[in-house]
Length: 460
Ligand SMILES: C[S@@+](CC[C@H](N)C(=O)[O-])C[C@H]1O[C@@H](n2cnc3c(N)ncnc32)[C@H](O)[C@@H]1O
Image 1 (cartoon, rainbow, N blue to C red):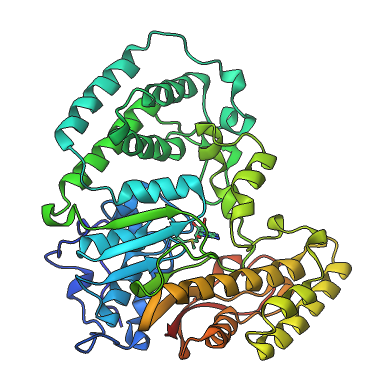
Image 2: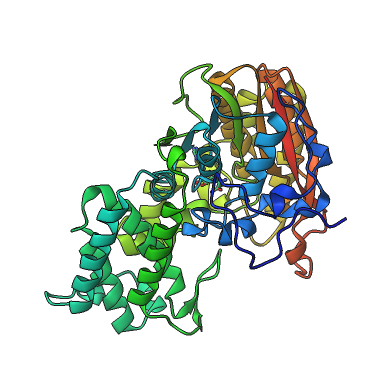
């Protein structure tokens, strides 16, 4: 059944405005008055809602192509099904680049998000700052581009840039990028983050190396684009998107906290819905994904910097985040999960034992055992902190993928559901969303355990 999906290339809706046609007109699962529609009734063709695909063309969402992002349509569905509307407050504990918050703002719903990566949090904050003086921004744009094109002053020496950055650009284009970066310092504070978002977007678009997400391949050369022209077009797009935001939505309360979802940072019993897509247990190093951006901006210059400044702050979901001296995986699980959900702790102990055994047998010696153990320790804390923020009777809706490191299936959504109940949620439900992992199918190193993405619904 093909319903609901907008054909590629069709202009998408400005947040908060109903398009003349498109996804919103397709038959949808409707919430009964007061909410609680049926997540299982979402059309199958909406299977991309766990990916960033839809956001690439959607105003505001498209400002930064975050590979870890999910579709804004997933948020729309959840708000519709939950009957969440103006007057409510939504919380996203793993806010990423702010997809949940942007959708909420467009609908006049107050929202708060927590994101641990400083650059990602700043991008999210910029995406929900719609109350920009556009006249001032346009005049600044003219001055900015004039200064950058005119050059003058001393260009910063290229040799100080990390090698990865040097490999991505020709010297003249990198000089232009650095001129843009230097001039950013002269932008009035209230506009600086907006200009920075356009510059951050320019980095991958203007590169001479293949910078497709998630990996940068400096050896794979592509046609380089002029950095200043690319910046100009991205900044203009940001300004157009802001112009298209409904005036009555610009002041809607949207807060982004740079913080840690594992600790309470949102007032207790203050939100009506929590909605998120947390890190999946799939060995994806979120800290490393923004290496080009953080190196270029001077936020980091080495693997060690990335570990210290970003990696350590994130929920463990990759082997690059664990050390053998973190402790025995079984002990970690039994201490943190045991008191909350003994059955899950027992099942997890078996899984980590199997993973420890496989680690010793395999040449790569990947610490999947520790990664899995620490993921559930971290996520137990995050579920607890999120439950604390929820009002009684409200729901925590998650989009989650399962995983199978070394071919050992980990039913993440089932375990997290049971842990949630152990923490005091009344009940949980898992609704499958789509199959995933297909692109690795031809890889002979890869396991053949079918993977999926699901909704996990935790009722408070
Ligand atoms: C799957 S992504 C969410 C993406 C988001 N839905 C979006 O559309 O951009 C998970 C996010 O959780 C963040 N994260 C990881 N550990 C965190 C923590 N302890 N507290 C808050 N955020 C964290 C990561 O940096 C990443 O941006």
